[in-house]
Structures are given as structure tokens and as C-alpha cells.
Length: 271
Ligand SMILES: [Zn+2]
Ligand SMILES: [Zn+2]
Ligand SMILES: [Zn+2]
Image (cartoon, rainbow, N blue to C red; front, side, top):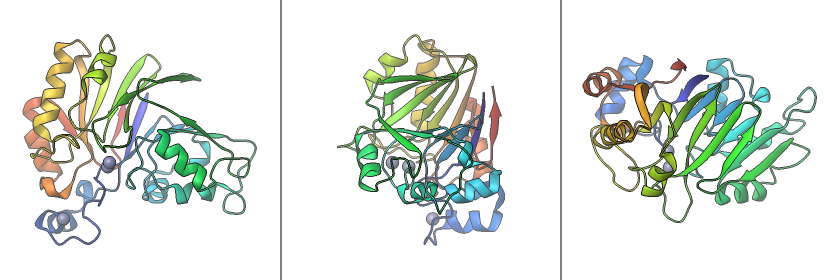
């Protein structure tokens, strides 16, 4: 299984749209891995996680054929993860797709309702929507996906995902605070090969909404203790906010003692 990190920033991007803070100035000066767009990842060539407003740029920068993506899993309705206006571009005359290529979109009630409000589903776009609740499981082709409960926006069932393909398992763990107990219970007995964890705060914590380095260390420890992770499991931090302040090299240094790698836009991992 191959995972390509398309975007690794929090909602405002980094450098952030209108920001003049020191972390954004430094990112602008240094460039490279310090330029982060809004959060998304591509698994193999056909399963996309989240659809931020930077998806157009992700398509260009990574040479992705979005028409070939068959499955889109949305974590929640925040605009840095879900930009339904661009999904309307799948209809003629905005797109001329060769043959009948269906895109199945999975998400919580708020996401599915929004897609209906935008009139996205149907023959024009060849988009189908499927509502998921925490702990629902779906299987198709070579994939098995389990939705898990996130601790994020109150009033919405935000989801994180466990994706199994070719005998390997990825945990996609953003946006969320430290995992809720029922999510830990659902993870019991699973074996994760790549754990991707919300590290929005960098060195800082935002309990009940996002994680920072202190929480992802605790997640790693508990996963190892409960046998959900093993010695070869890769732990990857993502979804970084400028308010955390640490640029890529500084994140690498801060996370190295704990065996965690910070992702960057364009980072590819094979398992
Ligand atoms: Zn986010
Ligand atoms: Zn800033
Ligand atoms: Zn969010």
C-alpha cells in the first residue's frame, strides 16, 4: 500500500493566508518542506482522504488523475477537509470523463447532507454518497475501512479511519484530540502498520479538539502497550498549525527521540 501526503497543514495553511507571525515568515523564507497546504492524502491511486480547497493544487503538484479516484473518505465538514463546491466540477461541461467512472463519497451525516444541499450526487457527476457513523465498516475491492470516533467538533460525529489494503493497515488520525475510549475499544485486536496522528499544536496541547506532541507520544505508548502497534509500526505526525511554531527540521528534531516522523507535502510512504 502506498500513501502520499498531499497536504499537512491545519485549516489556515502554513504560511497561513493572512498571517504575519514569525512562524509564517520563517516558512516563507525557508520554503521547501515548510510550505504546507490543507490536509489530505491519497492511498494508492484510487482512495482519497479529505477534499480540501487545495485539492486542485494537489492534483497539479502530484500529477494525480482525480477522475481515477474511486473512493473519497471525508473525516468531517470543516472547510480545510471538505470543499464541496469543487466536487461540482465533476459534472459536464466542467469535466468530460471517459466512460462510467463512479466516485463514492463516504462521510458523516453533516457531510452527506451538505452534498445533497449542493446537489452534488447523481448522474451528472457520477457521485454516490454513503453515510457513515462511528464504528461502521465498509468493504470494497481490496479495501476494508472502519470508521472510528474522533474527539473534535462537538455536535458533529467527526470520524477518523482505519484503512486495510494488501494485508496492511493505516490509521488516519486527524482531526482529533486524544482518542475517545470507544475508539480505543474498537482498535483493540487490530494491528496498525502506519499510524498518522493529528499534531496540530506542535509542542502545545488543545485537549478535546486536536493533539500536540505530548498527546501523540501517549497515543504511541498506548498503541504499543495494547498490541495495536508493533515494533515496525511507523508513526507519522501531520496537520500542523503555524501556532505550534516548529518548522520541519525542528519537528524532526523534537520527534526523533520518540521515533515519530513529521510528514510534509509530497511525502510518500510505502508499506
Ligand atoms: Zn483540520
Ligand atoms: Zn502565522
Ligand atoms: Zn477540523
